Length: 481
Image (cartoon, rainbow, N blue to C red):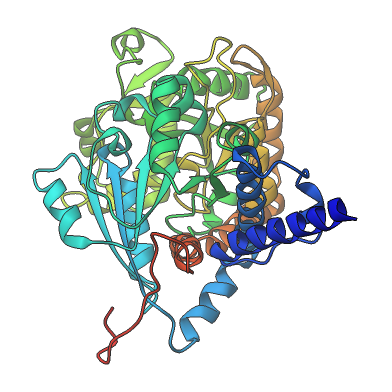
C-alpha cells in the first residue's frame, strides 16, 4: 500500500511538471500525455520527453494557423480587431535574397497596427549598431544556403540579436549539404523556430532538430499578375524560357532542348525560345556564342529595328528574326530609359522554365526548394518545372498549376513529353486561360501581406508567456509599445 501511495504521489508531481511546462508555451497539454511518460524517468530523459510533447503540440497549433487556405481571412479579421498588440520585428538577411527581403518588408508595412518591421542587409557598415538600436521582440534571420551567400550568411555571424529568433532557411537541402555540421550547429544554437518554405524537407528537419519548433511559412507571391487575352489567340507567339539567374541550379540547356523538341513536332504554334537575366560562374557564355541555334540579341539591335507599334509587334519581330534560334539576352533595357520595352521584355515569357537541380548532390537530383522566380506573379507565365516533391507540394498546398517535366534520373529530363504537354496547353486557349486564372487566385491568397502575417502569428505565439526570456507586449496611452 505504501508503494502504491508513492507511485500516485510521483504521478501527481510528474503531471504537475507536464502541466506547468505546457502552459509555459501557452498551450494545453494533450490528453494521454501522462501515459506517454515512462514511470521512473523523472531525469534528463524525462525532461526531454516533456519538452518534446510541448514542442509537438505547439508546432501542431502553429501549422494549423499557418495553412495557406486560411491566412488571408485570418489577416483581414486581425486587422479589424481592436486592441491587437503590435510586435516589433527585425529581419536580417544576406544581400543574395535582398529582393525577397524587400517584398517581405512591404508585407509587414501593410499590416497596419499589427507589426513594425525593419529590414537590415548583411553585411552593412552600421549593421551591429542598427541591430542594437532596434531592440526587437522577434528577429527573423534569413539563411539562404546558396553559393552567392557563402560570405554573407548572417546566421554564422556573431550578432547582438535580441528577442526570439526565427531562422528562415530558403534552401533547406542545399544549406545542409553546403554547410554540414556548421549549419546544423548554427541552427541548434540560434533558432527558437526554424521556418521552411515548403514541406519537402520538413520531416528531415524534424529528425535533425527534435527540440525545435519547425514550421512551414510559404514563399508568397510578389504580385498577383494578369491574364493577357491576346496571347491566347491562334497566331500568337508563345515564348518558352525564363528571365532568371542561370547556372547554379538552372541550366540554359533545358531551354535549348525543350525548344528543339517543340519545333521538331511541327505543331504550327509560333514557339520562341528565350534566355535572359543573370549568368553566374557555372555558365560559360562563350560556349554559346558560336552555336547556330543561338541568337545573341543586344539592345542596339532592338532599338535599330524599332520603334514598335505595340507589344504584339515587338513579340512578332522577335519571333520572325529569331528564325527558330533561342534568344540569348545578357543585357536588358533600363526601365527608366526604355519603359515600354523594359515592361514588354520583363513579361515576354509564356512558359517559365524553372528546372531546379541540386548541384551539390551526387545524382544531380531535383532540388527540394521553393524558388522566388516561380512566385513573382500568378500570370501570364505558366511554370515548367521538374516533377519533384517540392513542386508537387506547391501545387497541392498553394493551388498553383504547372507543367511537370518527367525526371529520368541523374538530372536528365524527358523533353519530348514536356513538349507534348506544352503544345496541348498552347493549343487549348480555354485550358490555358483557366490555368492562369487559377494561378492568379493562388497569388492573391498568398500575397506578401499574408506571409508577413504568418510571421506575425508565429511571433505572437512565441511571445505569449509567461515563458522565461519572453515578455508580453503592452500599449501605452499613445498606442506605442
